[in-house]
Length: 123
Picture 1 (tube, rainbow, N blue to C red):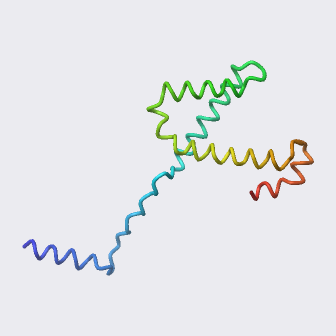
Picture 2: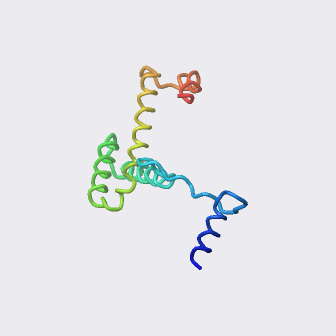
Picture 3: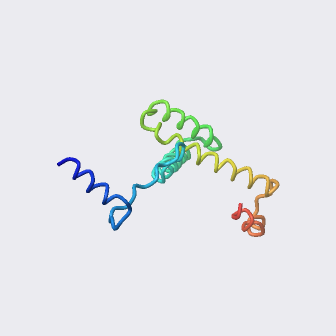
């Protein structure tokens, strides 16, 4: 009885005309999903928007930092799954910031961006 079922299942799993697809490869540890990346971007944009509404003129960045630290402290269980994606996003944006700051040499004008936008986009 049981031996015949095992033999039949082994015969069907030898790569013949099976219509089942193999399972997808396991995700690499430390990589975030598109949802996590999008959610971390949405949270950061929301915090920046709120900071621009409530902060006195010129204090957007310190207020945004305060709001994000408060949100991460109060809602750590909710935001913890987004931490790897947020770290990847933050690193990418930091690299982009340094590339643009070094590329322009401090001169921010329309001609600067029109003349060198394509190489920066390639970066």
